[in-house]
Image (cartoon, rainbow, N blue to C red; front, side):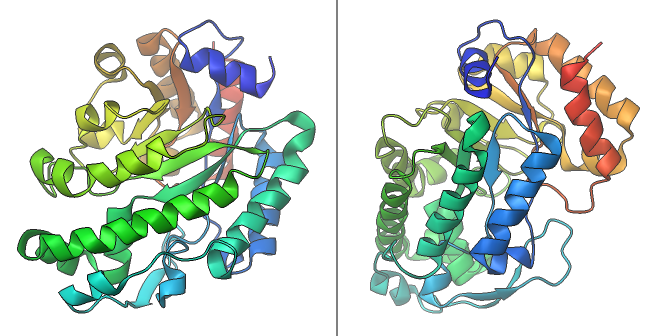
Length: 329
């Protein structure tokens, strides 16, 4: 099967020639220049031939043109540390305006995806763009503590800012929609976890903006995945959204794949934690993948990681994941 057919059949709970798989990671340093980032994404795909490619620019790319500054300080996830934030007062939320996708960091990321798509068009590899939710973007602008304080003390001002960030994100997505190679988005929620806030809070302050983004996606995009971070992810709340697959840390959440498959309507993208990939051995990873196959009956499943990936993951473990889906027994 070609990659698109394999993924579409897996999402539709139909039989496949093998379970699709994909791992992803940041490329710190390279993500400061769109040409270098494109080359790194392309080389990574050439090395492992995943069933889809997740493009992961610098974590703050959606808000850097607001004046956010960051630098990579050696974080194993490849995430840069923010050194300058631009929301210091609650009134600053009301002064945000949507960014133009034809200039600055957003335009560079569009061009990055254009380059990646052109390089991968020969085997029709689906390409998905990482998008951080408006609430996650707001945390990058203000810092997590200030965000949560304004959420509870100045919610109207925060909502004003989230509306602008949502519009900015939708304009960027509209620019991506002009690229034939893009198949969807990989939406990272970050705050949809019970250890951070209640479902009522998240449903009130964050979910409407995520719904607006998903409602505005191009009709021809067929691979839209939501990553629910945190120790206690709000999977039920997110599963109600019009998406194709859910991604979360199964180990942290304590949710077995079989139970999740029987509870949620979305397909499962995951099964392996970043710790599995970092600290495990090839044989242990193969065993974990075989267990995932059994629990999901090899249906409605995409084998993948559960976070942003660790740049220190042993290459032998990455190779083991790729070979395990080809020869699962």
